[in-house]
Image (cartoon, rainbow, N blue to C red; front, top):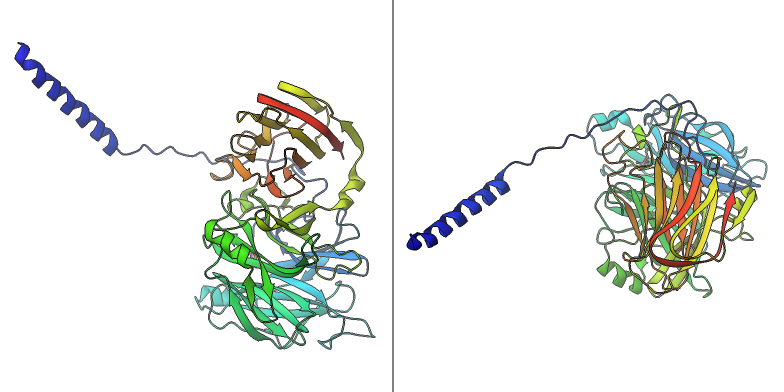
Length: 533
Ligand code: FRU
């Protein structure tokens, strides 16, 4: 009997490994994802301090220009539906970038096509000759997208055109010589952003051409010459490049001038779908070249991101902000092409981010862009809650309760014993026990945003499959989180706006509780506040 033991063991091993193999080969059962459509009440999820169109579809911000006391915001708009369609430029103006006045649609589709994204400038020297009565014209530079050409599968259906206004952007005339830059046979050929370059004394246009950007120069905004290309070998190419922006900046505290190139791409963003990378370098009137330190950085990281959330796309900066103001003001579309057309709002779709001031700093990581919330938002502060001196483990603080949580939370804290398990979570909660979480996890050395149980998520499979993460760059002992909460969004500016994360969410009822929890580890809260709006 004894002699059979080895045989029995061998047989056992064979059977076991057969089972294992068959396990490996067995087809994975597909888990069906339930997609739900939601009935939202009228006006539900409409932000209170973010720009939204009065009704129907909106995507990218366009034609952002400052003139005679007004910030203009034009935007990609389809006035007949809450999904994308033939593009127009919607229009609004603001004196403070916080409250907006809606104006009639500025640009309508025409024989040359839909009006895609683009920019606007004030032609101070009347180089175009479109000025009137000694007043400079406002010029819009945009992509015409010809749907017939697209259908016919030509590759030449996008080209750059211009229009001008002599009445502060209220009415527009399209230039008879359009397009000003015809298409040489590149399918994706769009989103012109124009600046006046003092050094080379010319208008400079940058626009996206699939996997790179093109620079053109002009003396008068009508006649353009190709200057150069950039980007095929740099940054991430996980999606198509769209909506670039090129501008000079003075490095904070150094007086040195550098050029920044913002570059949106879709998909391929840091947490999935649409996102915006940037490059820092020099522009000599013809070529954009990366700064050597930035080039070295890109050899390690595939991209440098402006915002780690999923909901800041196609953002560009305002033109003609007075030198006395000196800011480089930015605004993005607070959505993502992964789900923008199915988010559960009914009479309108999409909002813009809050306006931000971009600041270029030289750090231990080289040149980095910081996105600071504009100071004008302070005018919204109503009540202030001080949250000082709290310390300890298992901290549970109810910061606000009872009414809609809308406002700014400024947290400053340290992790006294540097315990990796330390996790600080800010929660928004409603009466349906839906929760949005945003916080800092010391083990990841990073911030997170979790909308998985924050309300409606199943309108598409990829709205909330995972937690979104953002790295912490600052090495300061004091961790700072500044979070702007509106009814359907959170915008995190951490460590003086070095790490930024913008996310939207759709609770079935408004969030009415704001809590701060430390479940693991220990923190010491320093000078912190909640400013309710
Ligand atoms: C970016 C974009 C642009 C285009 C516009 C069309 O979101 O795809 O490239 O001009 O939207 O609406």
